[in-house]
Amino acid sequence: MSFRDAGAATEDEGEDLDALRGRVAELEKSLAIARRSANVIAHDLRAPLRTILGFNEALLEDLGEGRTDELVSHARRMERAGQQMTAMLEALLRLARIEHEAHSTGAVDLGAVVSAAVADHARAVQQTGALVSLGDLPVVKGRAPDLRSLFHNLVGNALKHRHDARRPEIRVEAVPRGELIEVRVYDNGRGFAPGELEAALEPFQQLRPGDRREGIGLGLALCADIVASHGGELDGEARPEGGTCFRFTLPALDPDHAIEESLKRGG
Image 1 (cartoon, rainbow, N blue to C red):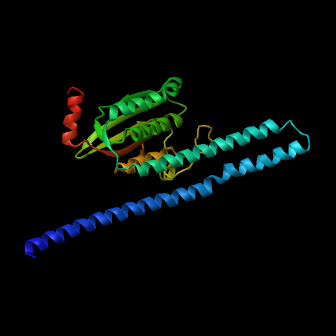
Image 2 (tube, rainbow, N blue to C red):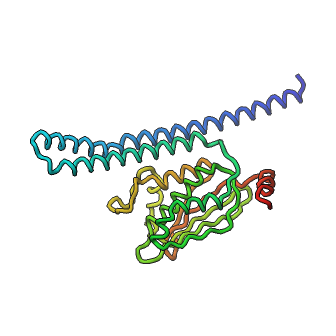
Image 3 (cartoon, rainbow, N blue to C red):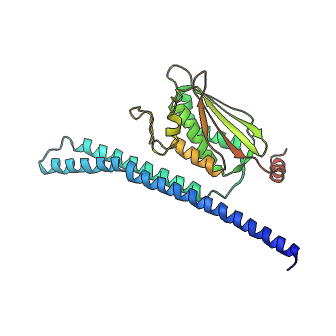
């Protein structure tokens, strides 16, 4: 074997080693997500399950003793607990799907995706009088269904946590950063107290459990996982004038795909 052949072989072995390390890192990440999901299932699904079991026992006692006045109330509480469990399980399945489909990407018109996500909330926008504005949003590399879910949750979060004393305002902007696109989502809502955002990015964390506007506590965690599956990190900060600014990066479309997309759009 010549020195040139030996050098080429060593280079190939180095590339194989790098690929193996990358795969190990991906597996470790998947295992971490699996462990977190298992902990969530074990801990957070207990509450609605206990509710169902408790009211089922009360319902059976009432039936046995001939009392019917509380039966409807028991049944409705059991139904709500069952709906909560269903929502949690569906959310966990969405998280699992994001991790599984992390490599199937293509050209995504960010403007169209954000517009569709805003349209999902048309009724809430109309009822609250919210002002939603979009900057010049480019075509990015990603998965359209997941990105729509990302903006659906961010817009929904801004509407849900609006400030009662002012008209909701939401703006989505994008700024090129080399091979990345930095996206910013602004709102003028109630914002986050110091340390709350980190907690909100964990699954099933309700920052204001007694608030009637709280959901199951998975929206921002889902957003964080979608951004992570696109190679970025979701970050947020309080705005001095009130509200929150969420920011994250998405892969810019490579030049060849950008030209193709421009031709398709008549550019």
